[in-house]
Amino acid sequence: MTFSLPPDSPDLHEVVHFVVPKEAADALDVSAIVVAAQRRGVQMRQIEMNDPGEEGGRTRITCRVVMAILLTQAWTSIAEHAPDTDEGHALIRSLSDAVRATFAAIDEANVRRSKKISRGESDQIAPRRYTTPEE
Image 1 (cartoon, rainbow, N blue to C red):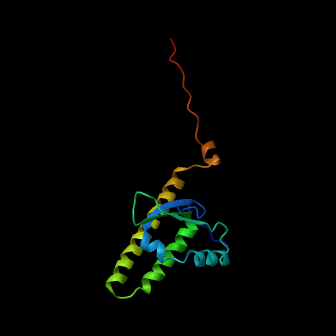
Image 2: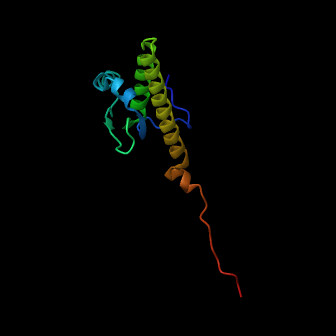
């Protein structure tokens, strides 16, 4: 049996950009996430992380939707094992902010995708005919 994504699902290969707290980005083992993605058969596994400059304490991440989903899974796993201390609570807040930013980026990708129409769909749109009024 073949399953297909609902039409309003984001394209898993769409590129997303989002900014997360540096603490959340630093908590990730990116190489382990990429290796896990490779084992799952993910083709486009790149994750770019850099300092956006003007936003101190933040990290800008660029990746595909499928990798963003894996990042949220990693952050959730890290949060589950955070100690019940003030530092652990601060880490959980940073992880929560990171997951929220990731889902917002995925939602934005979904909105961009829903605004696109295929060539087949564009063929269904009747061209407008402009005429000059007859004198």
